[in-house]
Length: 631
Image 1 (cartoon, one colour):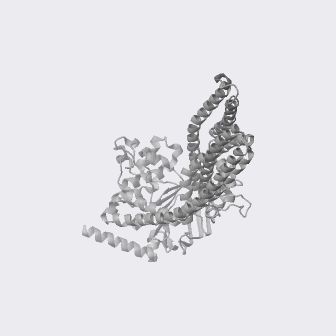
Image 2 (cartoon, one colour):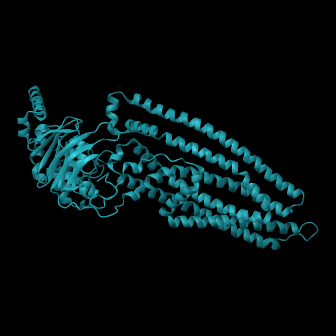
Image 3 (tube, helix red, strand yellow):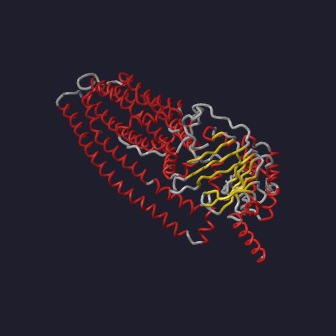
């Protein structure tokens, strides 16, 4: 189950390593320029795993483009030297004499054009492949982490940043990496030409861009820090946007006149974000101006050096012309390279939110086989205590209970008494802070989490409504058998859903819900019957029903509970209900108050004990009689 320990148990049996909250909620790491090589390496690793062949093709295309630039410069210098050598008092140049250089330039240009044309499509393909790979890793990690992590605000922040960055940053990293590779190859070609022409000018040109590079990286860190600081505020704003834009909340917000009130809250959060962003932009502008000013001064000094060398005879006119052309190309490529590195560094910083999140996945690999469950016979809860991360007080305190195969066990109590929390522990979704949960006499931290969940069928109070076909909605209970049409229809009949599902426009192939075109929505009670049918189709030995009849009318509820033993014959059933009349036939009833089990027994035993159960039962019965009289 989620939250299992990662070491060996006391009897030497290896426990499956599930991701703990501490694995994915960690202190922030200082982001500095010194981390760039590691970040770039990590970015390349992500791109390499996702799109190896297209990435290699891109590198080859960039190599062709970069080599072409250097070749253009050297052939251009040769062409210029040929023209100048035949000028003056010498014989004038002829077209035939420079034809080899012209042909060479034409071939080089054609190769570079083809490389650039193919590069765009390959770059788009790499971006898509990297995005798919990264989003899948985030979903895999979120699915592996223990459920209790979703109760932790820090985890929600990290998941939010990881998912957003998985959708956008890997593409930016891939593009930045490709741009950097192309820039490096292009610079290499120009550098080779400049080494031949004048090495000193190459050094001066590179030095000129150091201030702009340093300023750019400082600006990037400011932007990343801003994004991290805004995470919780952005989640709040996105939550309000969802409230104001979703169908489910639309009626109540209009009934209470909350549209403007909540809209103003949403706008205030946005205004706070923009105000902070303005401050960051002003700081980035000051840093950028300082860096660009220094770079401009150093670039001017480099050009002045070249002019001085020409006027003093340090270089020939042909070499000077080629060097001037190289200077223009070098400045453009250095600027492009700096932009690519800057984009790569920015994306890599944000990508680190993604990589830190998904890199904890190896911790979920089991070191040794876990204990098999075997056929379900008993489940024993012994002295269990559990506390949510966001609460100071435990939601469950020293809870003990037993469930045997073939029994119907009920959990009752007032709101907030811990019933649903206890159900999630029984289902292997939460791990207790103290005490133990034993399946067939084996502690769950020595069992495989998936085998526990595979043996369980749950209908939660806040069950999901899948906007898929009616057949899919039931078939998802046992998705590997979703083609079992007869089994799906039998489950629907058992849950009382057969009549209204068969009457849909396309029967069981009708799309449910209003989310997509052609979908048919159901009433709350009908959706609840579909969820119940899903649990019946799952056909597992341990069943948890959390308020399975909350949306049903009294007649339907009575029919459901009267037939429950037939639906789940031979299975252990845990039934949670606020309606005490529905649990009278349970084999054993556990009454919770404030996270404690205050009494347990059969209905008759609890009525005779005249405790909390008897009090609540009589109160509820009197309310029902009063309502009947009023009706």
